[in-house]
Image 1: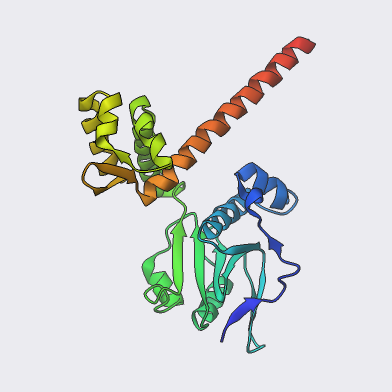
Image 2: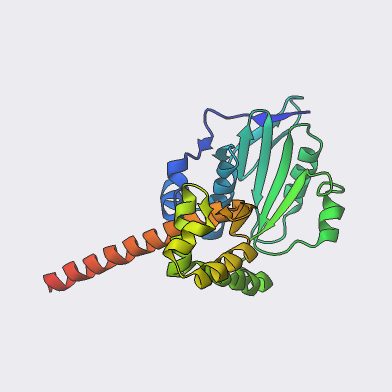
Length: 255
């Protein structure tokens, strides 16, 4: 059995410009009258994840099997050629109705499931509800790292990365790598050699840069993702603060 979108013409497709940031996504796809904020946020995270992997992404899709006997609803799905990823967003442990859909997806030839959950799902429960699905790659669990006992670990990891990037010397070294590889000797010509050695070591140990050839450095896959996101975050924060200050000035002027 293969799964397919049964309402592709009616399904809400997420365009890249609609998922540039959470505010844009929420304004476009959120429904304050019915949607819970966590559900909208999970859909946003799922949509960005799927689009980053080249999937056409749809919200609240209906899917059907080519055997004409199977159909289901989901929160998000990604389609790439004949491959489908079906996403379920859970506020707590998945309900039985979700597990039954996951078991059905596991029987398909072209689809797999992804659960976004704010809490850890016990491995024995997963195996009980969807035997073998994780081991065969038919099911993946993404635990959002901002809830319960995962918060502190995620926060510490995030703060360590931010601390690493909030450094003028390191940013002077990293920014050129967005365009091309960089040579250690070029760094040493512009920056204190002791600082070059210290910072390249720190960036390498953090997995931000790779050294494919001795003396040549480039952004790792992690660095290619983290650095642009970090710069975009700084720019958005700067713009938000500027807008707030301008509104405050106008408000004071009207008093």
